[in-house]
Amino acid sequence: MEARRFNYLGVHSMDHFAFTVPDLAEAAAFYSAFGLEVRAEGDAMGLYTFDSLHRWGVLREGKRKKFDHLSFGIYEDDLDRFRDRLKQLNIPLIAPPSGSENDGVWFHDEDGNRVEVAVRPRSSPTEKAVFGMADMSGRAGVAACPSRKDVACVRPRRLSHVAIYTTDVGEKIDFYTKVLGMRLSDRSGDFCAFLHGPHGSEHHMFAFVKSGGPGFHHCSWDVGSINDVGLGAEQMQESGYHKGWGLGRHVVGSNYFYYATDPWGSHSEYSADMDYIPADCDWQPKDYGRDDRFTLWGGEPPEDFGRNFELE
Image: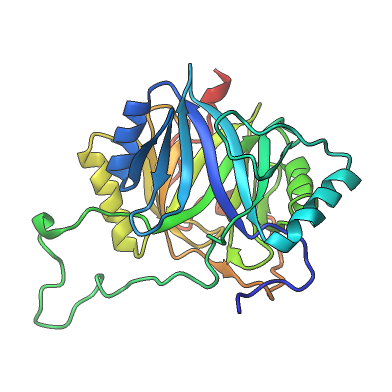
């Protein structure tokens, strides 16, 4: 039986994210190079991983890059309970965005972002992801590293998490823990915060970064090893996407990372070996200082890593 926090109302997965871009063809080229399967779906573009039928992202064409909405998966027996919670908290329901399915419950968070909770199959992991080390070390007398020509395209296994900009990190912690039942994993003052799912999830399925307004900061994708992270970075460089950050290892969440910057200033992250928080674990949040906010190793982020281009 799937692990589940007993008698606790909360989302189980990040189902998908959505934003607009000024050029869908350019977005398709970027995410294809990243290793995702890109599908045309009417006036939209869906982002998939190759070993899953789950649609992790939805992009539509607009005048500029703009964050649109987040959708979270819930268990079927929790749907009416979520409706009751929203009513009790005086959070009004809204109509779904054009082109979206009409079976979820939609509302705004305190930054005006559209949020959905909908009955969906669980897409977040139920245990810590397998992390491969076999490709990092070989036996004595044997060459362990393959030739470059023999390396396959890095293809992420699933969406790991999403990070968005917010005007008030503390306010968003309060909203998403109270309304969606998420739990605080860790934070760094009023600069950023990381939330996990109560029914078992990676260290964070959702994160916030301080900014002057809302926006989409990054989407993160799970891969199987630190070697995949490095190969993904090389893959993006060879595809012409030279701007990024990494290879490195985060303190908060413990994952190895490389961020590739998209044509509109947000980022896609290759992530490997993130901490996992089981449903029965009462994780004790820490407030990390500046020294541990970003990396154990891997250098400082680019100056514009936290720049919200959606405000310009």
